Image (tube, rainbow, N blue to C red; front, top):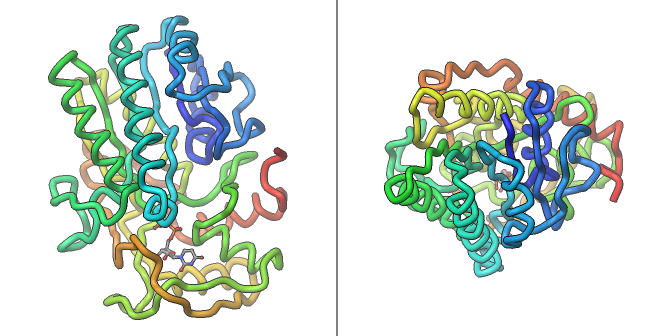
Length: 325
Ligand code: UDP
């Protein structure tokens, strides 16, 4: 298929773009490289270095007869969204409005959307299923939920078909692609940097949550398994599916569990201190991905916590400075 991947220079987008190229698809990456890295765009992709709010760039991407879009371009740091909500609404919601307008204009009627477990907020029960109530705890989650509403409304108004994939906590690396954010805010790369000696210690954001050891509980999913789900989502639309799906490992770990797993996998001691809670953090998130397994035929093969950490560590050691800028 001819596909457009927005945000294809980012962590998850570039790994999905790579998987699509390997699957024989023709891929155009549209990315303004504001948070991503040009070096992460896989070989074999056509690369348009532009913003999704740039109508000419979208015309260039869609003019080539694109059949579906995989939409990753967004800001994605929860704590940042609490401090800069309007920036998040502008980019994540405003940007997607421009994208959808161009898709409608060019008759591109399929989209796989990069959504998030952040849409649920503080769930009343675990594991979370797709029909549970959504009440985001932060502007980032709210921006993703609004986009999902826009996708539904566009389906009803002009026949858009969509699959919105609500990721839990992505981690891990594949071959030459890994996680590199500036600044890094995500738990696994930060803890690995402590293990690797690139940082002295890190701060655990709160140990007074109502969880087994007081630190936040999360469901970590390997980025490779996420990539597989995107490819299956494209096929699901061939069979008439439109809707939202959770993607997680269906197992939850506290921050301290992650620290212990990193120590086990790397053989290094991890120094940490306990700090205040981070604004916008829900105490516990755990997926039920049964619906994705049923609808997509999705099977997770790499999402043990050890494999996520092992592959992320390997990439970090090989790329101590991340991608070249
Ligand atoms: N976390 C932490 N210290 C850090 C970074 C993250 O204690 O330096 C915690 C954070 O509070 C959350 C979990 O690790 O409970 C996962 O955070 P991350 O930023 O990786 O993903 P999020 O769940 O925010 O999408």
